[in-house]
Image 1 (cartoon, helix red, strand yellow):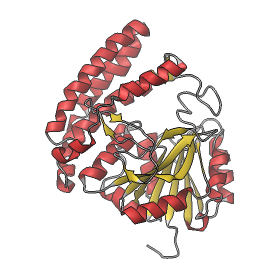
Image 2: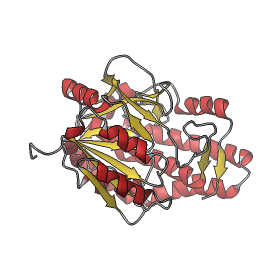
Image 3: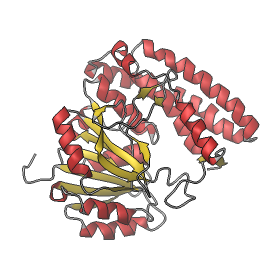
Image 4: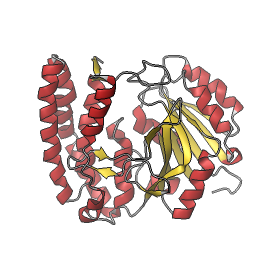
Length: 348
């Protein structure tokens, strides 16, 4: 790498982010490490004019690059293509509905180098205040879903850095194959983190590095800077349900594959409950039945990925059992439902 080049490449995949882009980019310009940062904004065929806005705003960012994909490539392939143009030693995949404290990247870099970690997440706070949102998932539950987001005071290992601000060494990102385009979106950070760990790497959460995140800005836009209701959609649940199974089928070696039938049982139970609550068969068909069918259609991709990962695997399922947590993922969803009410389901 050219020593005069950027140290960190920040990649922002934009889709209809006009409300959030300016504050996000302003916070990057204000970073204490700004001279060492490259900022790449890649647009996934936005329809709200945020592509033109991003192209204009990026002109005021030193080492700013704008890429127009010309199609909605999804989160995974959209970020992969942007990453191929990056020059930094480190990549930070950043959502557009975020803004960073001025020393966020400096503190993150310091802890990455001190701990020799390959991936990391800063402390994620809510968008408009300093209330806690996440410091990454500490593990996965018995159903194979990401579990246990808790605050802590010093840098420690986490199973999964948050997807809204996923930091990873570029060399490792390339070695692991980047994000899996077959996922399209959702569970992408869970899948990548699993590969980081089984390939012999390490991920950490860094509480001294702070970032603010709105969250679910596309699926759940009501409330402005704050989430005041829950929404989901046929398509979101399709990808979430299908990809949860894909992550396990690709990355689990042997004993952890037992989580696959457990997750299937969960999905069957949720499908029955959804039919009663939503009262729309088309939602159940799309979100559950078609998710399972599409997972089956991807069986050859799963087999190819298992063969590829076998070549870089350094850690077995028995080693990975240290990340098993007894706090179920759905408990956190239940807490959100108590706070905001049952999710509103939209057709798409």
